[in-house]
Amino acid sequence: MYVPGKLHDVEHVLIDVGTGYYVEKTAEDAKDFFKRKIDFLTKQMEKIQPALQEKHAMKQAVMKMMSQKIQQLIALGAAQATAKA
Image 1 (cartoon, rainbow, N blue to C red):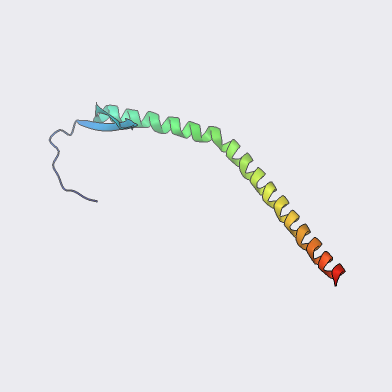
Image 2 (cartoon, rainbow, N blue to C red):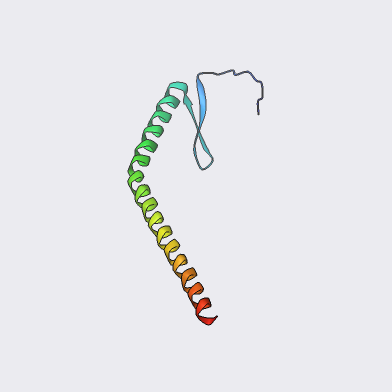
């Protein structure tokens, strides 16, 4: 949504620091704050990437095993139906 307006003070901004708290900072301090936040989040993403890949591989292995079990159950059911006939 766009709302037209005019700023009286372009040197200071409000920053949402989390959980509903806001801090007034200069524009330069705000840039530094967000640079640090981006760096922190990038490092955190790099840390969890190997774990994410491992979890994905485990999920794929479980899905493969479940598919094999389902195929075995289908084959067993078909064999039992043939034996009864």
